[in-house]
Image (cartoon, rainbow, N blue to C red; front, side, top):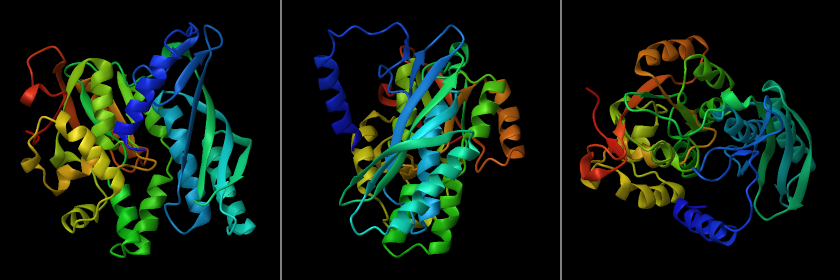
Length: 342
């Protein structure tokens, strides 16, 4: 669903539920559009809960299941949590062969197990379009929660996976990307954000979010609003899959990218005429994307080195927190600025 429509739905739903009491045990809800809900059980233990499901990203059913699971588990990792239990969410067409459905579920279960979680059941329905994903429950100590709120002026921004999954998937569907390139990208999508999650805690992260359907622009703006700060992203530092700049120049896009651009471009401190191929990737909706982490500038290089040593798909400092939202305005007073790195 496009971000504009979703914002309207949540606004109306929130107005209708405004009189309902909110439990003090709900540590993270919908107030900042964070990646998962967090509910305290005791002073030392909180549950992290989320759900996500996607349409196929490739023709390999096992790999599709892995990508869908990694995509869902990522929300727990973005909060600094550890996944424990998952339930499968399956919408299978009548024509889908049982053996193929089993491969999808097996891929999801294998990826969950890699992250230390178990798929213990789920729910299956018939549907014209194929969907698969997980509802995930994890755990975190309340003092160790990392939210999308908390970024501070002077922080650096680090991204842990390359951008461009939506462009690649649509390029493959359009016949301008080969299967080998798509599958290589899907294997990166299927990599868990487990190590980046653990390392961001070690290196004193102030805020984090995973980059998924709203693209880098949408999730960065969410962090800026939640934290009360302004962000500057350096397009020339953005890691992308190798084929992505060529595909953007060739006009490959998606409905999701168009909706993201329509929603977020007015909030960016850069004129539309200034967007080039590399800059346009900020609107691309990601599947199982990386973490966007804000942490102290003096820890950023060490964090990137640790990510690289851990084999993270991309480890790049892509921007900075340039001030409080109420401070000196950026271009046009926007919360997110795109500018060349210096």
